[in-house]
Image (cartoon, rainbow, N blue to C red):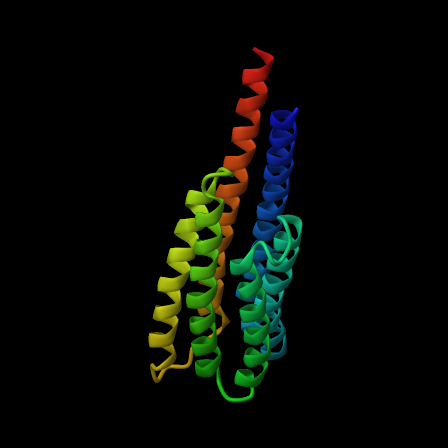
Length: 194
């Protein structure tokens, strides 16, 4: 009885993660498309997009942590929520100064949120599939953050497209994780049917 309950809980959580990863992919894909199109031609839209990106990350991490045992049980995500909310407010302030400041803020955020995402994936490694992609994503995010900080110090002003490339890579990793979980689920169903 306990094994059946444990299997159901794991299956339910993997279903949630699959939905979560697909939702993160979809948001990032729409965000990237908007950044590369209207975001390049309107500073107001670019500003809204730049504020929305870390705000969405905070909301997404909050819901995932809540759905995965609560904020107290998912400390890396809880910290990520706080970091992303602080980043959202800091981006608002940085937009008053320059895009160089905005990119530096995104750099610091990419490092912190990347390491926290990596930590979350490591904690989930034994229980759920597709975490290798989240570990890679977190590590790459931290590296991209360091690159952003270097770019922010260059004399040539950056634009929203600097962040859009980073967001596109993140979307790819979320898609890989979602597809990986979908394939794993199909394999389990096929194994049960045979």
